[in-house]
Image 1 (cartoon, rainbow, N blue to C red):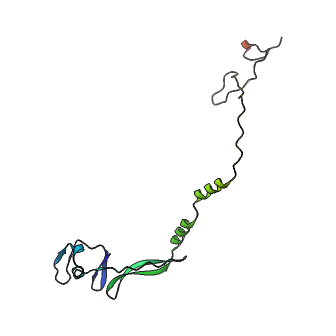
Image 2: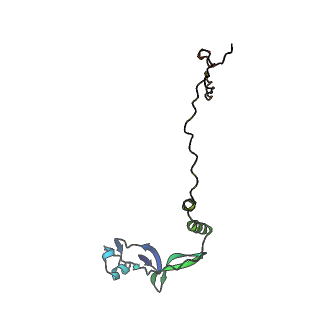
Image 3: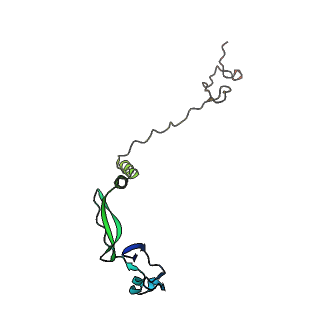
Length: 158
């Protein structure tokens, strides 16, 4: 990573451009990434000295900035307290996954009894006339010997 430094101020940070103008003569330099270091610096581009990020605490984090330290562009880490949003996100990431927790609980339970089996035979019902729309079928008792089929399932007495 490089920094463009002019008038003792960091103007930009990033990769070297493909070309740049020398600060002393105004001459354009093509192929700046492949140019010697002294030519890059003559265009104001200096390699940034990196610094390791300090460890965070439960309540603080560090912001990265770029500063000139003894004329050399350097990464500087500044400690600051975590915002409420950052604290919320950290707690959310550290909380156990609900789906995983439920699955673990279910897999650790002893097996439950299986549901009762349906009866071996299902009773058969017959239609006892017309059903109004939207109603379920009415059921009638099974025909007996005293029921006459021509009366529609109505028992008659003599």
